[in-house]
Length: 396
Image (cartoon, rainbow, N blue to C red; front, side):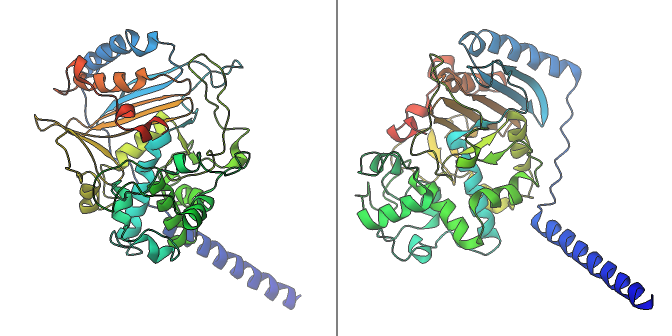
């Protein structure tokens, strides 16, 4: 009896220790994030913005067969939110606030912040070269920073893989792309740091570097370190195992857009999220719980000045630097039939999020035009579609 009692006591102690260890591990893995309290907004201000936004979207995007979700917030207060259409146009399942959409190149904002967190933790440096992580990489002098700000000069894998003899019935993984570059050595576009050249290869490599440094697959790392701590409950990195359940996309005529051999790479794309989850992401960027102020400032600073333009690029973020000193921090995206617009008007602390899964180029122009509701940004006829800024953007 005494032996049984002793064994029970020891077992309880072991369980308690293990539980404590697990709790400690969870705590260590968490950002311990707490969202900022939304700013105060009186009824008249709210009603004024709501009326303007309601009229604006009713007379623009919602007249064009829009299928997706819209969320506009100011200082964390949701002013306008609207979901329209069906998840799968072949069925009758309504889009709701919990429907995740492929956010295409808006994914790059997450990859960049994850990399900068590793810099903050001293696990890598912006000046580290790719060859430090992958000694067989055939292109010299390309640093982590040059990947982040699209000044690497590397060729875009969307093109060199498409034009190669790769078996198009097989999905390309991040590692497949890396090995292809090592073996085939496709011609680079420019010398490192010569000029800005938007290139999805950069962010596939950044995801690989993250995996190399942390020893954790990119989808799991993002879930554990970013999505879960920020309570982004409907956000995930797409993997092929998600094919049957992920929100599908459609052409402008409503036909289903099939997956292709480039659908398995991540870092440059393949995060699915919702407008409400992206608002949590936006609000976290107003705190120092993701990154310290210095690193955040570096992410939102311009790095390319080859030709005069209001357009520039930070570390994972597009920028518009207007003559009146207004600054827009944003990232749009396109992949298959998905269109994503995510913009931050930091002067007014306004967040503009529009996600769709039936191809609709109007999403980008409408997002730009909506800025004027909150400040002196653009005349209606002076907006520029970022999806046309360079050929690479056409695919993502």
